[in-house]
Length: 193
Image (cartoon, rainbow, N blue to C red; front, side):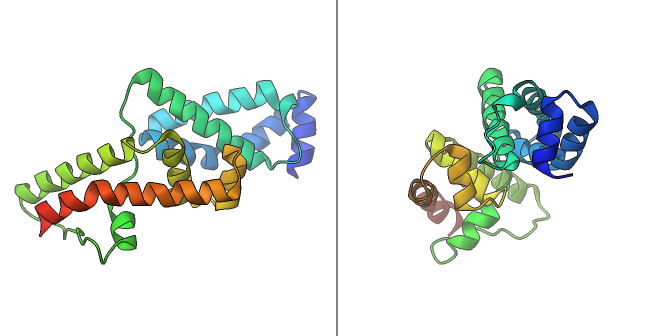
């Protein structure tokens, strides 16, 4: 069923239409939340909150936007609120591979699968350094970077989700990459080479 029809039916309290919307978009919402909280159980809990909010505020939906854009926005906000409330560090998926592949000529830290404990300790230390660097990004840089690199969302759609101009999103992601590179380059040069 088309999203517009689903929304109209949900506004008229059609529970089957709401179930259909949940079935259609639950993977998108859970994966988005998981990108921020890095825990499937927490992501599923947040997704429930997202769909409760959707149901309660469906009448506020602006039909000029896509429902997926609205879902992304609510998912991001709920995930960030969850993190703040629990005072947890944001744990993103390991982005070492992404970061390193895009900056290969600068640093090469792709560690081979090691069979000794020292290498595992080193990998854990690198992850902690990486997570700390990501934590140091500005609020908007973290959101834009995560949506683009982990959710594979286009700059245009990120602009809609974040209610920013396209050039602002491009700038945020560019600055996030530069800031991560600056924070990580010295550590990796010193500890890897």
